[in-house]
Length: 61
Image 1 (cartoon, rainbow, N blue to C red):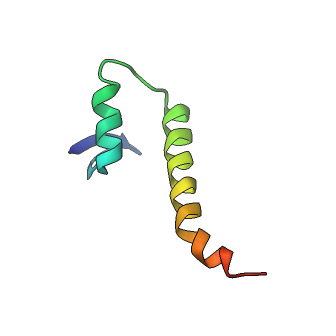
Image 2: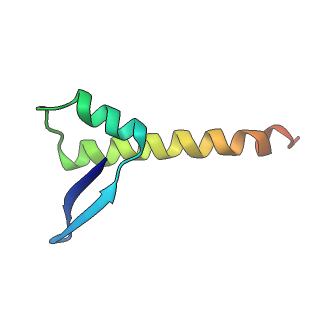
Image 3: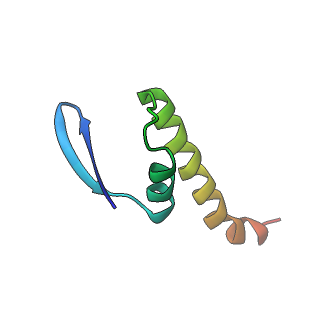
């Protein structure tokens, strides 16, 4: 699913991940402030980074 957003006065088109596309469809009709959107994306990014780092961190003392 592709989405469009206005970032810094420019219209940007980007592809949503399947999980974000599902969340977008479930939240149809609801709005989110810019701060809430940034917090949501940062939470997802941190969770993904932690999942990817876990095998590396498990091998460290």
